[in-house]
Length: 217
Image: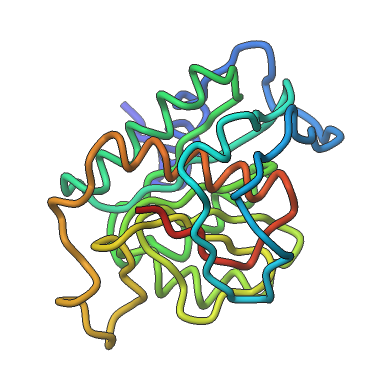
């Protein structure tokens, strides 16, 4: 029996992991916008690049993606925090009727290729979960400013305008070589915080408040 090549297996896995049968992603589409508006308290003034904002809790609840929004969940690692974030993205996509596909980077040598596979799908947004992706994203994203990224539970040290982060105290890992002991607490990755980070982060992206850090309580 002929065994498919590793690249073919990865491609099959991406296709089978998609949600939303109404959209097969077979062609380009006009990027959907936001439904609803941010409540007062999300921002008080337009943030500067790389700024950190601390929105009022729930100020993002009125914002939803329009039908047809395409999202790739890019994950790396099988640790509990990453799984909590991934579960939150999946639950959000189901609740919002978002068309979701998942790309899993299987190890350090696959981090950059995994980002490439996610971009090849040409989604409206790539949501990244897993501390191992932070440094590779810093390497790749600056060269692909037309692709929007949302990093959950971490942040890039110097994000470009297309990279937004949503995190909270204990979930602000910024890459290897920086002090992880003061910026990472696995116990802080609760389902409630992860769910809020997804919604607040996506609301920020949909309102073109990108290249910033959305810091939750």
